[in-house]
Amino acid sequence: MAAAGHAWRATTTSTVWDAPGDGTPETAAAAGLLSTVLAEQYFEQLTRWLEASPGEPSEWQRAAMLGDQILYVTPAELEELGGRVREVVNEYFERQVRPELRPAGARLVTWLNIAFPNDFRKR
Image (tube, rainbow, N blue to C red; front, side, top):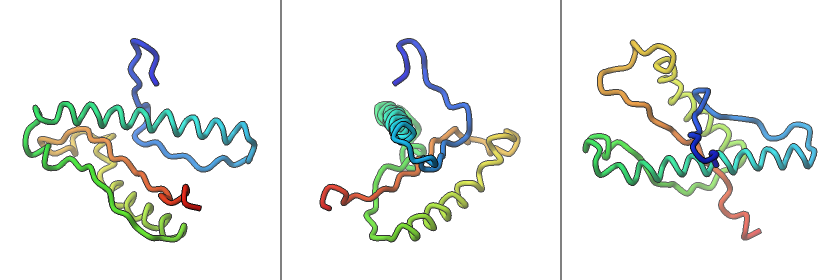
């Protein structure tokens, strides 16, 4: 969570990291803490949108997405699916660094990539 009086702000256009490479418990704990903090911040942002959305233009209310899809996939299929989604989303990346490419009415949008096994408690 951000310290009182300080807002968290991204300093890059995306947040992605590999699983801990050195395999130490300390590295795993640090990566786990980072993931937890980021998840809390993303869902805090989502909650703020949900609270503000009734006052937003109807086209943005319709365009915003919140939902899920349950899939049965292998680890390799999940990686491939993530890569395909990133390819589509990356088509809009140039607009981050070249504002002149942004069409009228474009707004800054957070696109969350979340996919994880949902049956870990059943094993």
